[in-house]
Image (cartoon, rainbow, N blue to C red):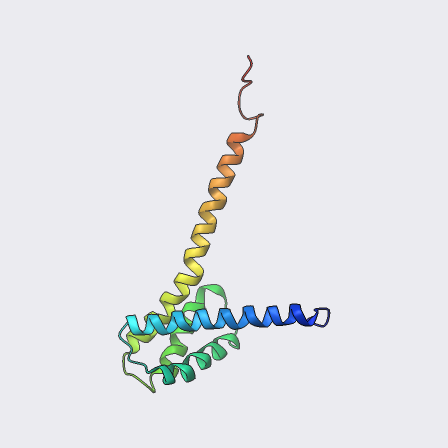
Length: 130
């Protein structure tokens, strides 16, 4: 739990959490605008935290999370705009940007480091002195 944290550490955790929320909210708002969903900043301040709250409390597994995000985006944002395709795509693309791209990059880096470590193993290579 958090009871072992000092006040300074507790505030750091809060600041990082708020920063993460601001980054994700800004990403979603930018993606919505890019997809043609007309949403005023005041409407976004109400809708986006509601979407994240619903996504947080909905049990899902990784493969279905993009669909859950898109569905909640349509449910909440349809009160402000009629572009349901843009809403769903925004949620799905944001999930891809924040989950799929880092996962693929990490897999590539692990694969690359695995092949590099096999090349560096002296037992797999011949004796250079003979």
